[in-house]
Length: 285
Ligand code: GUN
Image 1 (spheres, helix red, strand yellow):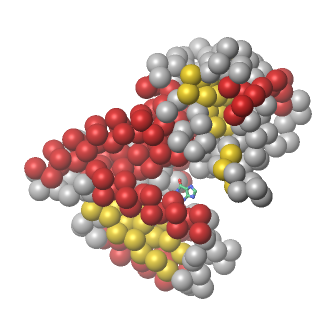
Image 2: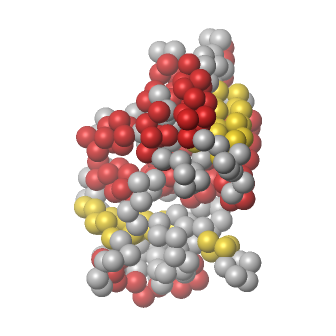
């Protein structure tokens, strides 16, 4: 079997158009959805991500602004900047780009963002809401993965779903979202013994480990949907995922490419969450 490629760029264009229409409805009622992104320091990858997020807002016609703060910013200054954005009526979504410099307490920062503007869905309240199934803002990457599965008509209910990676940004929320869709979910980590035993059972395999090309064709069930959240730059300059695309493509039913799979969807779901935040704050949903 040769897998169907899940074209994240194409699906993301379609989904952005849907949210553009929602944004236009808000604008007709006098509300321009606005996103503020705070970036601390000069991490080159973070700068690229932020640039792409701002471009996506522009494409959909949202207001966006970037607050750049130096690497040695004191935590209190960052918290003050967030509090001021919490009060700012032109801003409906606030995102602090991660990772933060080591001297800043990430948990404190995320909990300072107003719950109703937490478009990343990383606030403890939003994380807890996700666990009980009252999702306010689903974290953008797993939300994007769910959207890709839906667009490809890949059934989730009753399926064996295996998530490799247990980060707060991807693995844990992804597992919860699949569980709420009635999949049977296993979460594997870098310490999982006999990982192959789990991955080869998966009808839906989501990989978010940060380990280049670690999932190979022999680890995958024939016909599975394989979603690669990883993005790794190799020493030879190549950009690869956590899945060995060439071998897995021979076995899977569906596969996301890297780049052009999950990445564009993550950014699209940030736009979606920003519009949803504006709808909710102005009770216009
Ligand atoms: N760094 C890597 N991914 C993300 C994300 O989804 N949101 C934020 N805020 N930072 C990130």
